Length: 168
Image (cartoon, rainbow, N blue to C red; front, top):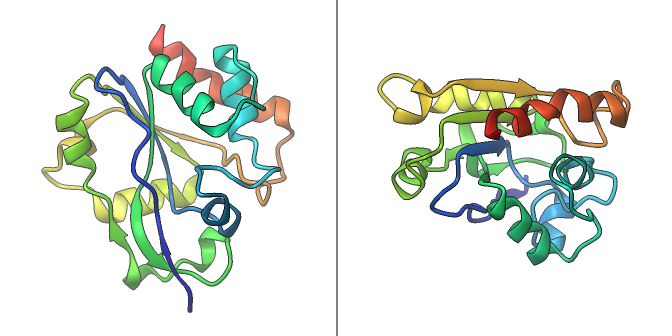
């Protein structure tokens, strides 16, 4: 069983929207970046929504998200998982990220978006009750993962437009 560790958040103090994934894929860990698999639709979607080139280098893409008041993090900071499929995350091994601490750093976050069902499920399991993050409006969006192939890019882009709409 392979233990996977996540990354620090992409976030500026003035962030207003938080996109939560589940846990980095093998390709993301190897690339040392969020959504590092070349067929993951996350960066092309963000580029289309916010008017930047999805082929920019990683730091420039992160800067673009921060400038649009978008924060990115994962629900889990660590977990055991063989491979990259979220379905294979061992539930009992999940160590959640301290999402309420991010809200202290970024008090303007007013909406949470889940990148797929696994992120939403992990969130509900680990952040409930009196957690401040659990009281924010939340929207589950279709996964940008290449494993979620039931929707075409255009359909995912249309669904994800709600992120831009919340920020306008």
